[in-house]
Image 1: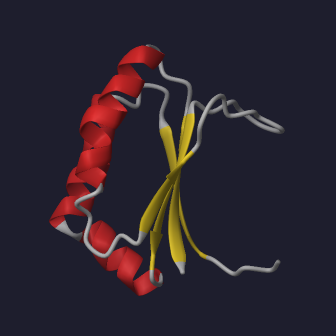
Image 2: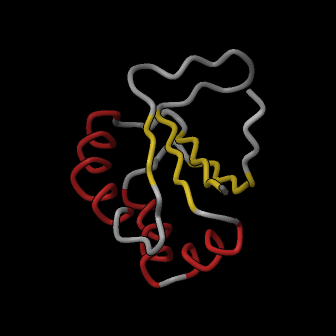
Image 3: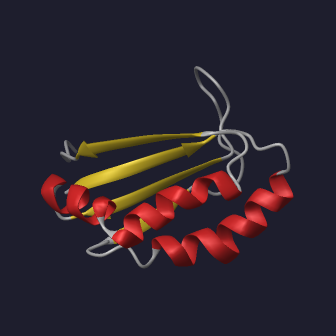
Length: 102
């Protein structure tokens, strides 16, 4: 499996972020082709090291080739382009292959 991990910084207006994210962005992301699943953090995101975060999202795909093709699709590009509409605290986006070790 391969995943995209999005770490959203603390926004200027958390209520606006939360409303927009769940009402507009999540349905937009759900249209990304070949998306196997989405996991969202709940409650506060504790910073054990580094900067605090407001929300963490993980999008799962079958493999890295599928992830790259899906994120490059029109739906993937629309989802990425939507970040400017609500992520005032910034977003760090990482892509990686997964390996279960336990």
